[in-house]
Image 1 (cartoon, rainbow, N blue to C red):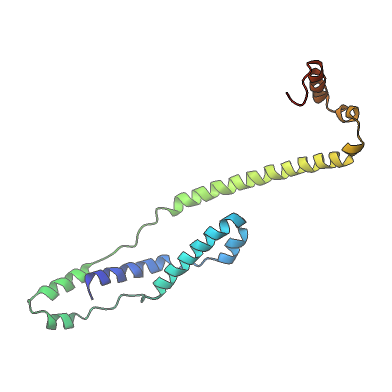
Image 2 (cartoon, helix red, strand yellow):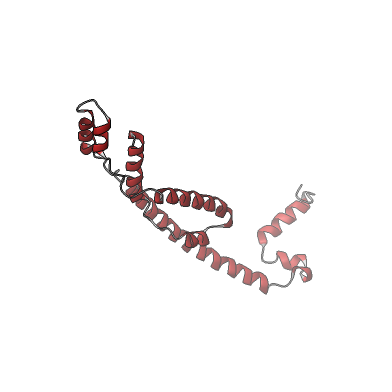
Length: 171
């Protein structure tokens, strides 16, 4: 095995630890608006491709047959030197520097979502009250202009001023 293959195997083994997270894609997709589902399905396909690639490689790299290389390479001490360097090699797992800021951001977003929900419920109550008022009114087709302007004094004043200034149709 070449150094490139060894490096690839080590990277694949360490990335396997990252790839153990299991996502419920159906649940996530059910919460997404329609306009984001195409992009989400593209992400899901890429994720599954990477997962399949990770699954195609063994958990641990294939052990190196040092005896084979000692017999095949005539330069004395070369294989021993490589073996010593290989056994001293330690690739640390990367530190997680992203989770803490993401958790803070998620908490902020949760607070914002709760505030938005409260405001939306208040807005919904106001709109339902306004709708009930509109439904309780006489239909516009049966209403006279004076009846319509009766509870809208500011609109009545504006209409009167426009008529006095000969402004028609929002000129």
